[in-house]
Length: 521
Ligand code: GDP
Image (tube, rainbow, N blue to C red; front, side, top):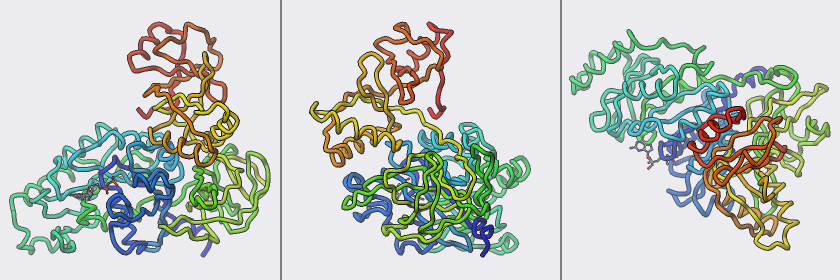
């Protein structure tokens, strides 16, 4: 098979949702279709008592949640599917955001009984910023939830994206009869615990058993309304991230999952060209290239290894190949590579643009690093830094351990899950992370890997705003409520206590320009 054909087969995506919307349940169903697992209930340790596919670290085992993202991959319908797992817990981290830089599309799950929730909104904004195509699965149709039209309106208004319902439900909860599959021109009948059945539109009139005629007729009216007044389907708009195809179903039943997945896989984009410092690189460029979007240590505590997750962006990866690390211009041999599939770590011998591989990291890589083959030199667009939301002062419990403390903190910060700042006045170390959980991971790793016990002093949620590099920094810029700190590059930022103090500051200092790194609040 040619390189181009291999690349065109790749479908690399992540599933995003608010906790409890049904991401694990849906993922399991997809893995079942891909024959990757034999029974549902094996993905999340929390419920089954078994370890999750993605729960590697000790801390994850203890808490029964997935802290870091991993990758599942399997062949399906002639495609090669790569699903990137994102932490579902509410204390999610930058890892979740970063994972979204390594995918080509996203499935957004919405709980029909709840509508759009806080975390869905945050993750959606990251996708929007990066122009990632988004497919929506509205879950839990087997329960009484919000009306389908109301949900469509909510998506359009809150997320500001056009919707196109790919199917339309008939009733919900106890009255749930099935869905009109507008795309496949068939009625998919819900049969409770039995498997769903498919009835082509043209045979529908003969289906006497579709009783509860009132609900059925009402739905037909809604459908007519959608056809007449709704948005027109446009694959171009979908691929531009301007329209989201919406599927209704139930991940648990499962119902509507198969038609959703088949349609999604056929429409989801294959790897697209990616921006670099030297212009755009095509995925079927024969020279291998990729970037590191995540580094994880201690996946195997016995070996204390570090694994860098690499998104292949062009060409073909082969085990043992030598590549150049763009940042340092050094040549590195990629001998130990692995694909992270289910609970086993299989060695991969080859991978293509679109694939994700885990490579052994001899402490050489940083998040955002570009690896490449060939003569050219370029780097993939810098990964965005996401503004931390929770801040804490950190110190070594035992002052004698200052040296290890510094070393540990420097290395862990380099991995990128947590950011380091120094207080302007006291020079104390301040950590910032997207979620609370990162602190537990940090504390655990400082103890286990660097033998330093750390203590935190809570600062709490803060709103960080950067100052322009030429801004004169003096006492007038900070007070008890607003801390002035320096990031690792030496840029100053103010940590505002709340929205009120931010606005107060703006009123008081109209000439000071504040930079919001990235709007995900
Ligand atoms: P996650 O936190 O997003 O991974 O959510 P889970 O997949 O763990 O699901 C959260 C809860 O919702 C679990 O109790 C599931 O059994 C339940 N659930 C998931 N999908 C459905 C569905 O389609 N219908 C109903 N009634 N419950 C569901």
